[in-house]
Image (cartoon, rainbow, N blue to C red; front, top):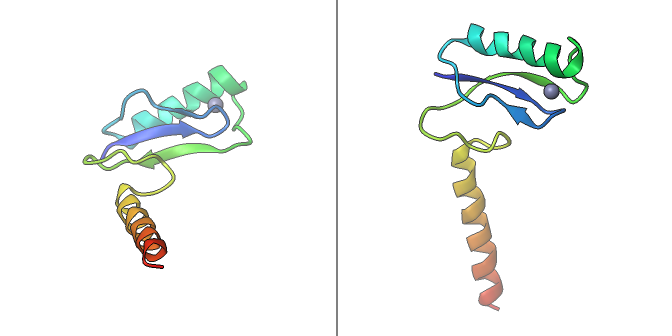
Amino acid sequence: MPYEYFCRACDAVSPERHSRRDDAEDELAEHRRAAHGGLAPAGGDGVRAVHDAARGDGCLPSGSWLFVLFLLAAMLSNCWGR
Ligand SMILES: [Zn+2]
């Protein structure tokens, strides 16, 4: 499973995924050094595993969008039914 670095303070993610977690952590250290003076950003950062099939948006696993769509469809059809 590939890994990517993310920084919530800068709203930044790795431009490309790394097959090894160590590589993403190197990028984390590099970003902290370049953008945050070597400190951890207050907004949070870290390394996360990403699924090969779907990148998702970082907030929700991609599968949960189907569930949200289903809920929306159920709500809409409920309104139309009245
Ligand atoms: Zn940052």
